[in-house]
Length: 80
Image (cartoon, rainbow, N blue to C red; front, top):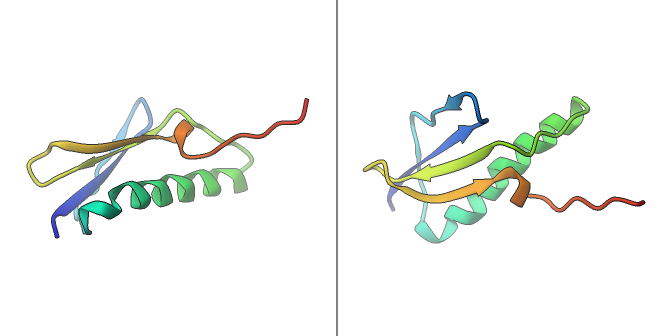
């Protein structure tokens, strides 16, 4: 299993995943989605949702192998 790093970008700052995780390649998309939704859920508890951030998943060489924008992590349903 490759070591993958899930870096958080909010448009201003970047929080690096220093340790990384050894996960199967086929779980990258699902893992990024879980991470993004956990951050969004924490924001909901504080009364706000910022959908501008993203998570970049990099391999050990620094190549971005997946990018998940928070806006793509949830579906917003509104009543008008």
